[in-house]
Amino acid sequence: MEFLYEYGLFVAKAVTLVVAFVVVVATIVGVANKQKHGKGQLEITSISDQLKDITQYAKQVLLDKNSAKKLAKEQKKEEKAKGKQKNDDPKPPRLYVIDFKGSMDAGEVDNLREEITAILCVADKDDEVLVRLESGGGVVHGYGLAASQLQRIKQKGLKLTVSVDKVAASGGYMMACVADKLLASQFAYIGSIGVLAQLPNFHKLLKKNDIEFEQHTAGEFKRTLTVFGENNDEGRAKFKEEIEEIHVLFKDFVHSQRPDMNIDRVATGEYWPGTKAKELGLIDDITTSDDYILSHYPEREIFSVKYSVKKNVAEKLGMSAASVVERVIMKSWSKARHWF
Image (cartoon, rainbow, N blue to C red; front, side, top):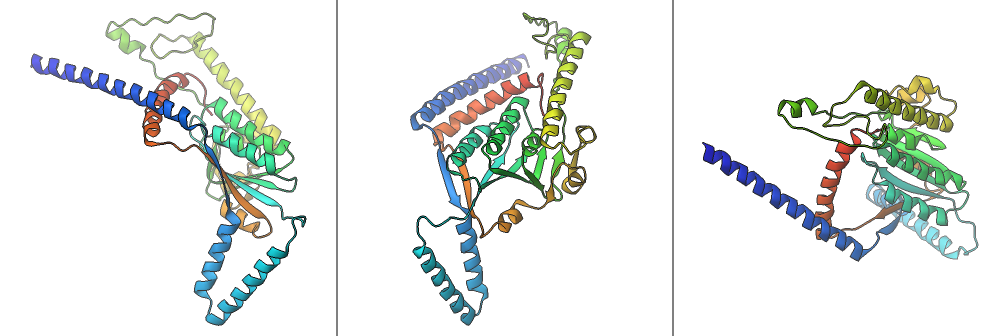
């Protein structure tokens, strides 16, 4: 029996060492490949052309022969008219569409920054930006930066519309409330204006097994609560104070963006479906992003703007392994920090 125990312990150690080695090597390979390939690329796709193709195909299938011929003639006339247009003829305003699907660490803000910068470099004053937003929130600093990126659009004098088809809660709502016009589907989750912080504590378990833990800090509140040490009431009080301060900042920011809303009524950490959110003033209208886009077609030229970084196999493996390690470390740290 002792042999089996020793053998199992040896296997566990061996597996741990192998996994650690693979993670380190894969991370190095991934980072090296990323540096070699450089930055990502910007993709601008015409949604107007996509809608036009869908419409033409549907008509060709559904119309009878005479109607189809008539449609073909009309399309030829349109093409000729476009060919005669001069370069100095006024062009229709544009609607730029950005998709933001946020994770807990708000890492997508890097791509958002590039997309917004590209739009601001070419947009005219009559153009509009639509952000299709989906996020349940995450780290304070990440979503604070994401909201600031959206503010750049308004500071440039462009109209900003945010559409929420599924969820914009906590940090996601911090982003959404920046909009000049905030839309949501009737069952989308909206709100959760609050702050969350939690962490486990293993001090009693360590003490029971005669394991000592030491932590040294400089500064009275460098660490308020700890995972392995013994927590005290003074640290808990300071931790709670920090949470309340961030909640006040969160409330003040939302109220500055939507001053007509009763902020004390909605800043309770609760969330509501779109229909109730409209009654509370959290959003402006009930609709989907698809319907909003269609409402601007064909009067506006509609473009999807997406920035992405393509990864090869080695990079995907390396960055995935690095991401796992980073998330484990980040979670152990951030559980003692604050989350939207």
